[in-house]
Every structure is written in C-alpha cells, then in structure tokens.
Amino acid sequence: LPFVGTVPAIKPAAERSRSQMISVLATPGTVARDYTRTLIATHAGHCRVTLVGSRTLASIAEAEMKGEAIDDTEIAGEIAPCFVCDASGARTDTIVLACTHYPLLQDYFARLAPWAVEWIDPAPAIARRVDAVLSEKIAPRPASQNAGDGRALFTSGKRPPSSLEKALLKMGLTALDCAPMPLAFA
Image 1 (cartoon, rainbow, N blue to C red):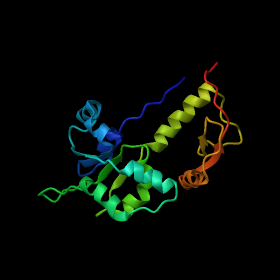
Image 2 (image 1 turned 30 degrees about the vertical axis):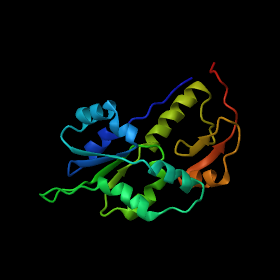
Image 3 (image 1 turned 45 degrees about the vertical axis):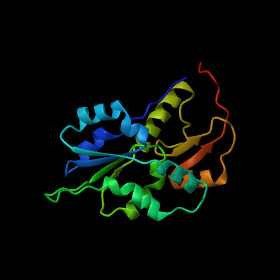
C-alpha cells in the first residue's frame, strides 16, 4: 500500500515570510517532535519560529464538520500565542497550519486574528501528492475530470455523513467517490 507522509510546511513558511517571524500551529505531539525541530533548523534557521501546540483545535474542527456550534473565544485563545511582536515592532507574518484538521477552521482563524498573516495550508500539496500516487497505483484520472478538480475518496464504500460532505464541498471538492478500496494493489 502506498503511504503519503505529511510534515509541517516550515520550509515554504520560511521562504515566504518577510518579517522572518513564523509560527507553527500544531498538535502538542507535533510541537514536541525532534523531527519538527530538525525541520526548523534545516529550513528556517534564519527565522524566529514560535511553536504553538493546541490541545483543542482538532476537536473544534471535528465539531465544525458535524455542524455543531463553535466558540469564537476558544479559537481566538488557541491561536493568540501564534501572534508575536518583538521590541523592534517586527511581528509574525506567516503561520503554518500543521494539523490536517486546522484548514477546516481557516475562516475562523483569519477573522479572529489580531492582524493579517499568511496562513500556510499544506492540504493542497498533500492532496496533489495523494492524487498522483493513487493515479499511478490504481487508475489514471478520467479524461472528464480536470486536473484542478478536487475529489474525496472514501475507501469504506460508504457515503460520508451530510455534515462532512458539506464541509468537504465547502473546501472546494467537486466529486465524492465512495467505492471500496482493494487491500492490495496490482
């Protein structure tokens, strides 16, 4: 079975930051990993990087997908440590969303942020890689589907709950495939 690993998008954040002050909004586990610190040393050694581990944002994103009420105050409190301003007036201008759930809350983050920043969402790059791997292993993309079209593949063969389907469509997906996935590839 093919696997696509994900890593915090520290390299593109460091390349895009003008202030050289970036934050990585992640789960506590990602913040604690030596691998994360190695990525920072390798790709963002010239930047001031603030690591912010949230214990609740993934659960809040899941609640949002279920259509449950979301507390703006709780989200604002979770993202607040990402916004750093130093004595010279330089401040965070780029924030990495280092959990697959966090892009689902990006509209909240932008609205609740104390100032505008660039939010680095790795989901499009991950989706492109997954699509390429699956196209190689399973079948090429149908000619009727454009390269920019988004699709979700549910390997259980079951249609997702309507609240999840709505959340995925809101993220720009145009097709939901619900065919069972074989356990082995030819």
